[in-house]
Structure formats: C-alpha cells, structure tokens
Amino acid sequence: MNNKIIAISGYSNSGKTTLLKKIIPLLCEQGFNVATLKHAHHDIEIDIPGKDSYELRKAGALQTIIASDNRYAMICETPNQPVDLKTLVNKFTDIDLILVEGFKDEQLPKIICHRSATSKTLFIDEFTIAVASDEMLDISIPQFNINHPEQIMEFIKNYLYKT
Image (cartoon, rainbow, N blue to C red; front, side, top):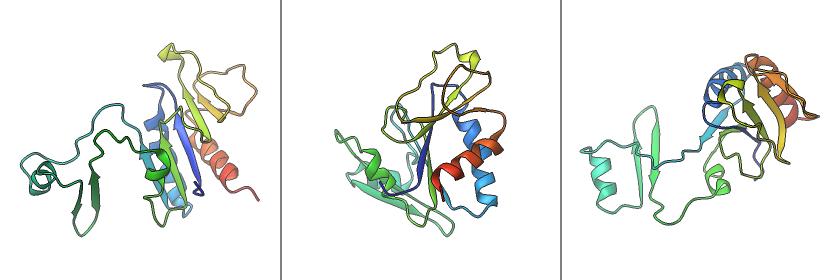
C-alpha cells in the first residue's frame, strides 16, 4: 500500500468517529483530498429495498453502481470472500491521504482513541504511533488530548509528509 494512510482505531465508543469528523475538515481546509474507509462489524446495507439498484443486485449482480450528478456508490457482493484492506484502499483515486476508522488489528500506522469512561484497557500494538485520550496515560509514545483535533491533525501531517 503506497497510499498515505493512518487508522484511527480503538474500542467501541472511544471517540473514533467524533475525532475524524473534526480532523477531516481541518485537513480539507489545508487543501488535502481526504478519503475515509470505515470498518463495520456487521453486514451493511446501503441500498433501499424496492429501488431498482437494490432489485438488480438482489437478482444476482455482483457489482452495482448507483450514480447521480453529484456522487456515486459501488456495491460489491463478496459472499464468503471477505475483502482485504489493500483491495479496499486501492479503490480510491485522486486522494492525498486515507483515514481508516477501525481495523485496529491491521498492520498499518494507527492512532488509538481511548476514553476513560469506556473502562477498557488501552489497546496498543507495534503499529500504534500515538494515542488520543481524555486522560493522561503512562505511555512512551506520543499522546494527545482527544478534544484538541488541531494537534492530532498536525501530527498526522508530520507523520505522513516527513521532509
């Protein structure tokens, strides 16, 4: 994977989506074309039953694209063939960086979100490059206040675009 990619990972309710919703506009304001890739632990359904695209997919089409003047979505059926992260990342085009939400067990650089209220043990692995938390932790890697997205955004830029 040659793309500029960082995961924002952590346990459920640790603040991953909230943090991303703050970081993405900051990066966009600085001219970055940002893509996101979110992991879901359940089966997803983004098409609406009864609509033509849904009916065509349910009829057996393995790939369906729904397109309008302002956006498109591609739905790919992958029965009994879970798609890997590299395949998903390679679907993106004209992007400066990809922010992945979740995928904490993948071998990619990640910032771990941690909130004291979740009562979960801090997850850190060899690919963890920083932690965003609402409490000070006794760790040896960079640590940021999860409520200060500007600092985290600067860390991401410096990490991905080292000079």
